[in-house]
Length: 373
Image 1 (cartoon, rainbow, N blue to C red):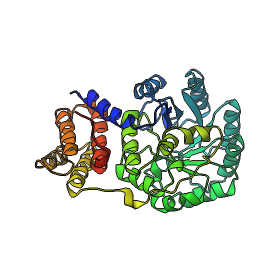
Image 2 (image 1 turned 90 degrees about the vertical axis):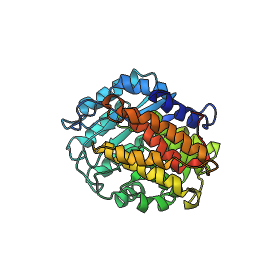
Image 3 (image 1 turned 90 degrees about the horizontal axis):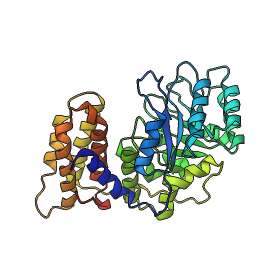
Image 4 (image 1 turned 180 degrees about the vertical axis):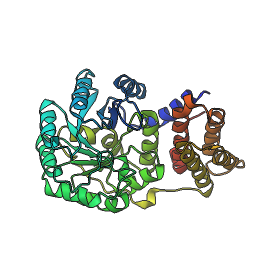
């Protein structure tokens, strides 16, 4: 079985657990070719990736553009207009730009449905003087604010709470599982109706923590394509949700109706309690597999040789007949055996990472089951 077929098999196994007929919406993607990090997002590739995953559509905003966002915002709107309803355009601004408030007003009037703000790329914090007028414009238009809340920034938890508590009707989505503030915000998120979280992150333990502490209706599925990938992101979001015991209605909210409601200026009416820490079950053997797989992914991201932790993960799958979750070990082993010959192939890097991350999720959610590989 080749790598693409393997990833599709893992994806289909996860997707079959989605309630029938639910249109999946990805709450966080990008296009653009001027980001200093060198990552390029092309709208044709984004739409192809969404189609391949069977997703109905996605929120899209520009990549980082150090030269300003007026042109980029017009491009995003044009891409969305040409996408037959499959893309929801979010404008982007740098709050330190003296024209940022005017650009927000112009773009919202033109048809943008939300605002992406990036504290690291744009070098601002949530106490910036322009954020309140931006937030008021967003709330009045029923447009959510999507904040980068991932790596590379100091805490923004108090600032996010103050923003939603001060501006009536404002909805804030904290991207990347809000890893910068998850331990602080997660347990109190239910007390602040305007705070939401997206799952565009690769570390499955963070996704598990998010789902442990935050009500299901406050979480939206996201991939961060082109940094992420819809197939991989769906797998590592769905498996923890199933392990957490999400009902069909909660899965529908996670993958569809919460984000489509926010795009329409509506907060979810239903609110379920978070599952709590007790939903997470594990075995010592599969924790060993996960730990070594996680180490191999970190090494790949750091452009280092992942072969040693990958080999240890594979050896940890050599369990005896009758071992608990033997079929899970076998499915992971089959996947790793397919990955190993391609571990240094730059053309296979994306699918290799996708399969490794799928296996990290499988090792932590064995009761969800595995496909027949």
